[in-house]
Image (cartoon, rainbow, N blue to C red; front, top):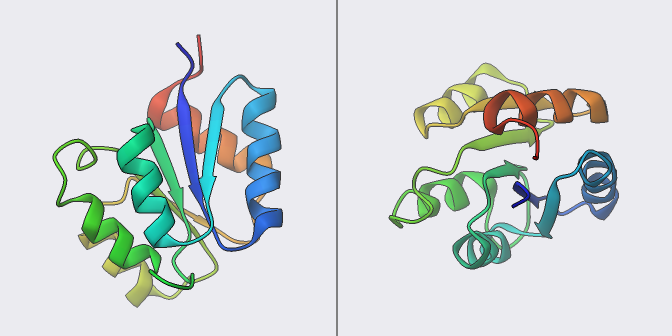
Length: 124
């Protein structure tokens, strides 16, 4: 069974870059374009890892992360913040919410692949 990655970002080009890189390496990729949609996809798909932007419409990444922690079946899914918010106050808030890793935009697709492999391993 392949490993599933959920990408939540309001910028479709960011989703497509990540999707292309991870799919080419054998991961299954699902996505959402805001936190509310991302929460629903996470509860339905139960991904192995979530790559989550912070600044999004409808529901931001922090609110989605807090909501994920309320559900038993999504509580333990590792979350990687993929964001342009690089200030220490932002990283500290995300760390308090229990993120697994931080990737700052702009990023290389190889960096994303490396972090995903480090946290959930490679697909079979």
